[in-house]
Amino acid sequence: MAQFFAIHPENPQERLVKQTAEIVRQGGVIVYPTDSCYALGCQMGNKEAMECILAIRQIDLKHHLTLMCADLSELGTYAKVDNSQFRQLKAATPGAYTFILPATKEVPNRTLHPKRKTIGLRVPDNRIALALLAELGEPMLSCTLMLPGDTEPQTDPYEIRDRLEHAVDLVIDGGWCGTEPTTVIDMTNGTELIRQGAGDTGVFGL
Image (cartoon, rainbow, N blue to C red; front, side, top):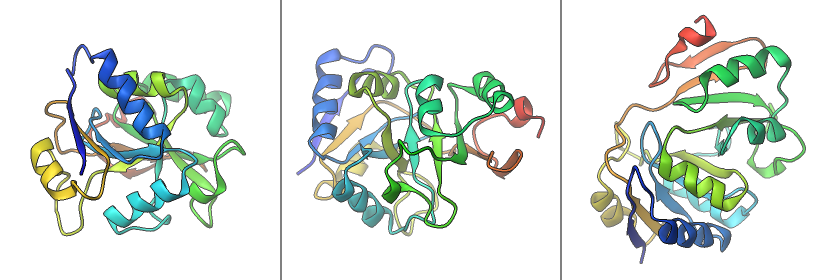
């Protein structure tokens, strides 16, 4: 049975953030708010938790999972980024973007796209997510909460709990997040727009 935390979107309660981080460290799968929509998250290196997320979404690793990072320096630890790309990323983060980048050896191999050895990375502009990432001290493996058969991401934490109460360990009610997913930009070979979403592409000249 999933736990349910109501966390304030502007002033996240430290006690609840710490409890959430401990659930993630213990291998739990959580539903949490971001700056684009609600997402599923788990500890980066936990194989069973990752497989749980893949099963909930009914996807495989050809669908990029994302490392949700607390800041740009953390992103640079897990992705290979040149100086020009770093400047672009600095102008766009935090924000509703997912960047496809070549992964460094810091990223567990099992989380990568099987052929390309790439990973999605992002720095969310959401206080709850950032507080959680700061408390964890490492990125969280994540993907949008889009359930099989649905045409839009889930938005109502109470409905999410009803649908996933036996599949996840925690649902966070962090207020309205919207339904528009992130803008996805592939930076592995130039700068290519993969999906137009909530993030403005103007900063990349697209």
